[in-house]
Length: 321
Length: 301
Image 1 (spheres, rainbow over the protein chains, first blue to last red):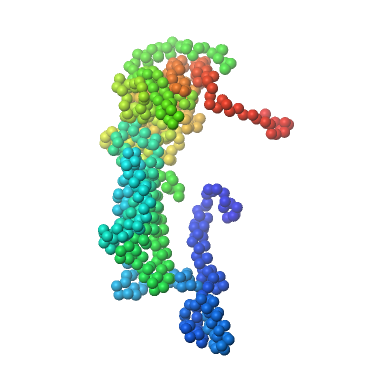
Image 2 (cartoon, rainbow over the protein chains, first blue to last red; image 1 turned 135 degrees about the vertical axis):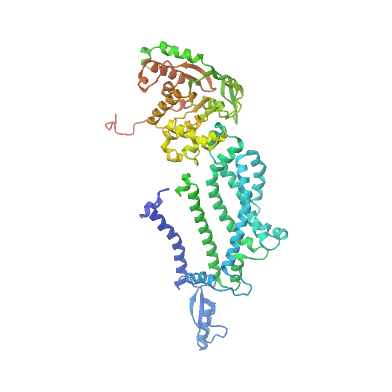
């Protein structure tokens, strides 16, 4: 691929190049991470002590600041004692890719440290359930209401101004309230996801519904379509593919509310796993869990996209992607 | 127009044509429009789109409405369809006032407005199903119509797989399957290329001849209007008023060869003089001042 051909506005790409660049978009950040982790002179502000020498508070395996290490080395030199030895290292919060990959694997194979602890997959499954119920409850209210707002102007004027106001209230702000009303377990977490999703959902679905070509509605009316049939046989099927796409985007938003939601009340799910691991400074596990969420998100979305293509064969714009 | 001098008057009719018009006017009145007016409220005040429009259409008549842009011809069609309300006057179909959209008035739009999620056959069935016909009966009717318009092979195709002309055929079938009293067509062939447009005009005349339907056809194409119409309603702009209701002196059945016939040219000359009146057009102020930027020897003409 010629670089100058990259910057032709909206130029189409061959399938091969698309795949290549898609892989590249993942490989590139990974490469940066590898360089930072494995090339000693790139960052490595710390030193991992391999031999404490005569420094009494150093221990082998300990991470110390580079300046401290150098000071002690100089001190030992002038005192004529054995200087400490060590290798440059990154801070504990930046584990190397390989460590994270291992943690990703062992997360599923090792039993939890604590007796009452959960396996990683149990935590994940719990999170998925929270997301599912939050998004489901939001959708069974938000989608029909959005379609009504997009179809009937009085309904829209009655509902949308308030929703517009409410969507600016940050969902986590309702955490304490949700706990007071719904207890400390899953109830408030689901409620936070509903609050975070629903109000955006109503507005987005309403806007999408309004985008349906009015000429189609007029054509149906001249064919003698009654009002209720207009909604069921023209507006609904007409906007369904777009609503489906909106729902995919909204599901992504619901995921972003997950961590905050799970911190409310009794911490649970993948968030509980992450906070626990961070407490013990097992940052490789923390990263592994974060990536797991990302993978679940994108995997689910790809699945839904493929399903959408099958469901809406007639929709050109959906099939073009 | 130099040729105008040699042409007969557009008012002269051969005996055959006159007899036809006599028979046509003896038919019952299907559509009656009395003092129709339409005002819009805009930010700049009230705009009159239509004013004192009067005319009648007889059963199985083919009427074209023509006029410059902004004369309200589309508004007229939309009022007849019941998609817009009028502010004064009356619209009577079979003596009954039009109050809203209904299946007794079919409409074909310039944008094809086929339902993209339905196959061709389902599109044609749509009106029947909305009017509570069973799916099997509607399917049978739709198949008949698809055969009539020659698209039975495309019954299970989706609209996006069809060409513009085919889409418009489906749209016509979809409107006619409902057995409306009148078919309103709002520049239906405006988006088609010249070739498909000629084909569709002939096709439309064939349909009109074969079934009991009255057509009100909006267009801005003079040739199209003369080729199709029995009578042409000429509107003028600002406000939209009837200028003349012209009886087209061109004999039926029509064929493309008649485009060069004296009656055709006379009618066209008359329409041109009506539509391109000396009234100042909005872009009359725009006067290009072209300067030659090339070598005088490098002449393209």
